[in-house]
Amino acid sequence: MIRLSGCAWSRPPESQGGLPILSDVKRGILGGTFDPPHIAHLIAGETAYRQLALDVVSFIPAGAPWQKFESSVSSAEHRWEMTRLSVEPIPYFTADDSEIRRDGPTFTIDTVESFAGDDLVLILGADAALGIRSWHRWRDLLEQVELAVAPRPGVGRHEVEHAVPKTIEWLDMAPLDMSATDVRERARKGLSIRFYVRERVWQYVQEQNVYG
Image (cartoon, rainbow, N blue to C red; front, side, top):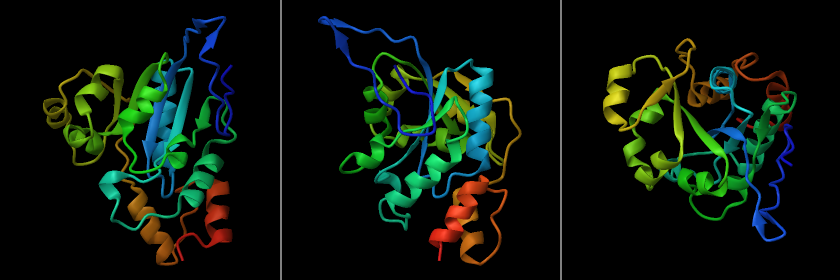
């Protein structure tokens, strides 16, 4: 069985007695660099869980995010630990390290295909949805997932719906003007990021001097 906890989950065996095990798990997938994972990520996951009657939301930090490959990204170790600490107390949130462990650039389609048998909902922000046609094998991706999109300031719904050739489930949450880039910059300037992230993440960032 899938262990719904804040630690990396264990995938169930794929067969028993030669027959495939069918899954009835409705899983939200919320991926990203998570540098750091912040409150807006958690609110999107919570909203999707409630609104779409999900069984679990998997938070998946990217290993080598190909669209940010040349940018400065914190180590996979730090991003994994911050993700784990963000979701650990919440029984229906789980941290998944499959992309961290995968060699080479990280593509969402590969992650989606690794969850064969689950009913999948891809959770992303409106700004990310706007550029989904630039994603690796985006047509295959859209065939395999439902889309749950969180509103973002400055990104219109009509604009996103025009760009994405698929029905979108808009998450019923306030557009939050928060990004990991902004949170990192605050930390690097010596400003407090407490309450931008979970308490244990804030403590970890301080203890490990993640952002210098």
